[in-house]
Amino acid sequence: MADHLDQNAYKEFLNLLISGNRTNCSAFIQNYSNDNISIQELYENIIKKALYDVGELWEFNKISVATEHLASAVVEAILNELYSKIIPKERISKTVIVACVENEFHQIGIKMISDVFEMNGWNAFFLGANTPTKELISFTKIINPDFLAISLSIYFHLPILENMIQLIKKDFPELPILVGGQAFRHGGQNILTKYDNVIYKPDITSTELFIKNLNQNG
Image (cartoon, rainbow, N blue to C red; front, side, top):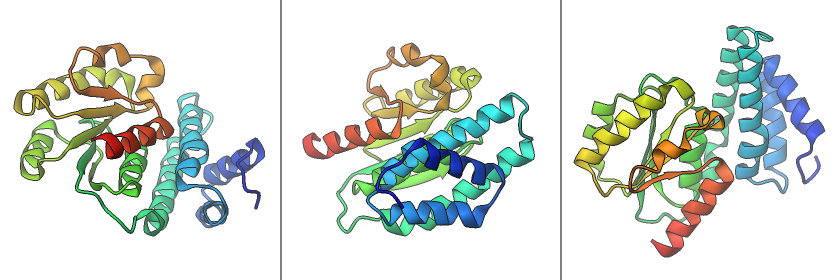
C-alpha cells in the first residue's frame, strides 16, 4: 500500500464500510497501519471522516439506520483490533476520564480520543456512551483524574452538556475539561468560553498536540 492517504483510498474504505464488509475494512486498516501511516492519521483522515459521512448519508435518508449501525459496529471492532498497537511502553502519572454526554449513544469519536491519550502515556478510563452526570461525578471522586474529556455528537444536546459542566464545576471547580465532538460542526463553541478550564478541540490532530503540550509543560 502507499505510504500516504489519498481520496481514492478513503472512498474505498467508505464503500467497504457502507457495505458492512468487516473483513475487508479490517484488512484495509491493518495494511495501512503496517505501513508508514500513524494510528492518529488513520483515525482522523479515514475512520472519523467515514463515520461523519455515514452519519450524513443516514440524515439524508440515503442509507438505512441498520446500515449506519452496522458501520459503527464494524469501526468499533477495528478499534478493538488496533488497541494492542497503541499501548505505549512507558506511561506517565496522568489520568483522564473519557465519556459521552448523557443521552448520547455515539461513542466511537471519544473512544479514539481515549486511545490518543493512551498513546501519549496517559491512563484513560473510558466510560463510553450515555454516561449519567451523577455517575460521572461519583466516579471522578474515586479516580481523582487530571482531566475529563467529554464528547458531544448531537447539537441539540448542547444544553445537556452545559448542565453537565455546571454540575461538575460545583464539585471540581479547578478540574480541566476537554470538550469536542461532531455537534460543534454546527457551532456552540462560544458557550464553552463562559467556563474556566473548559477547552474545546475540534479534531484528533489538535487534541494530540494539546496532550503533548500537557506532557511537556504540565
